[in-house]
Amino acid sequence: MLIPVVLAAALMNAAMVAASAVSTILIADELSPALAGLPNTAGVLGTAAGAVAVGRWSARLGRAQALRTGYAIAVAGGALTVLAAVGAPVISLFLGMLLLGAGNAASLLSRYAAGESVDPSRRAAAMGTVVWASTAGAVGGPFLLEPAQAFAVSLGLPPLAGPFLLAIAAAFSALLAASRIQPVHAAPATPNAVELDDAQREPAARSTTIFVAAGVMLVGHLVMVALMTSVPVHAHHHGQGLSMLGLMLSAHTFGMFALAPVTGWWIDRSGPRPVMLAGLATVAVSALVIAGPSGMTFTPALFVLGYGWNLCYLGGSALLTTAGANSPAARAKLESKVEAWVWAVAALATAASTWLFAAGGFALLAACSVTLALALLLVVALRRDTPVEQKSLEPSC
Image (tube, rainbow, N blue to C red; front, side, top):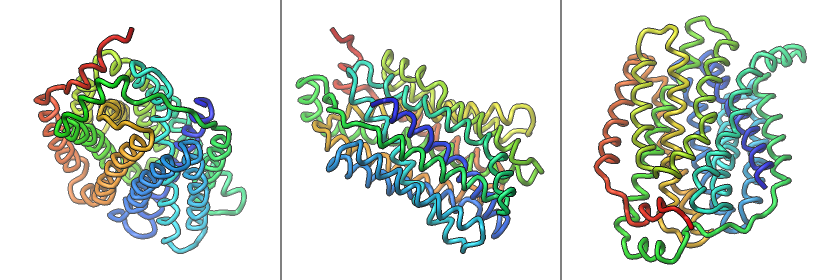
């Protein structure tokens, strides 16, 4: 099952990266730089709504069919973005990004399918492997922006239509790959009855676990989205073409995905807490570097920001699996609900990013980012592991 899951996730990442970057430029040129974040806001909202839908479909139809449905919706979204690029009303772009978000949600939630299929002591490593496999699409996609632009010009289409054509092709390929996914009888999320009893006896601890897991995922994602949404506008205003923008995005997405197996191994060995602390500290430091004088450190800082997101995202995901949901349907709904909240709140970041950037540049964005990251870092540092989390670190016999 893992090969088609991995391939579909990689292709969907390529589609989303290509569409997100170019939609920002399209709106900046046609409307206003201050409004350039709105298409990505639509994509984030689509991901949030898609996460809820994929969770419900997973509970009713199984994960395989839920993933296929999400990718099919993304194909329709890609078609709408192409129409917007060739002269259709701008609303087509927003609707297209909204539907592409459903495919993005399917790609993101596929990591839990991998985690369910292995022993709990290797759950984080399995999730990390799926995230790592997305590197090919997320890093390779930006490098195809300029060739896609040239292809569109050769067809007599506007240059910016090329990356959107790339997005629809990648989404359709993800759907084809997902058609090969076979249903898997998932292993129980809780390794034994004792852990389940602990989770049921401590509802307050369970709620706190969910809150902290969601909070770390949310803040890490919010900081990343707020900064990265303004990067294409920054590059465009400095006269940097799609090749340079592609390099920046590839460095960032490489940081997001390439070291995921290391993160998974670290979580399985030490637990989610130190990984989450490292992630929050990393996104804060990278935000400060990005806000500094532009130069040789800018693109490397985007890589570091990506890895900080990886630490927060996988650390929070691993912590969430200890929350005590006792059936596949309950787990799918909990996972999708947290994912939806993460992306819904992150929509505020995409909407505000370019507005804050226009008002105060990366310095203002960094100040907001560091404040959020350090506040949550203090919460995580002061929190004690629950009995369920402590048991999850015990060596399996």
